[in-house]
Length: 143
Image (tube, rainbow, N blue to C red):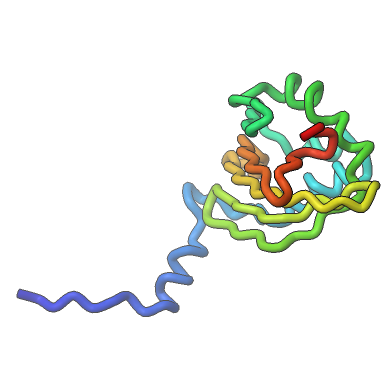
C-alpha cells in the first residue's frame, strides 16, 4: 500500500490560482469597481459589473431577487454610505468572499460579509449578503 503524502502548500496555491473554465478575470478588481459605484452614487458603474440574470440575497429578507428589485430596494442605501473598508477579500476561480465595514455618512460602522459568484465574462452573477456587527444590518434598518 502506497503512503499518502500531504500536498505541499505551494502546489495548493498554484492549483487555487488556476482559473476555472478558462476564466482569467480579476474578480477583486471587479468587486472594488462595483463598490466604488456605491461610494460614488453611480448606478451605471454598479450595473456595469452585474451579469445578465443577476440575483441578490440577504437577510432583509431578499431571496434571489432580480436586478430591478435589487435597485429598487437597495439603491436607496447609497445616500447613507460614505465608504467601504475592506477587511478581507478572498477569491477562488469564479467565487469571492468579501468581509468589510460599511462606513455610513453618520459615522456608523456596519460589518458585512458578501459572497459573490461570477460569470464567464467576469461579471457578478449573484451576491449573498450576511449582516453583522451591532445587528443594525443595512444603514436604514430601524433595529
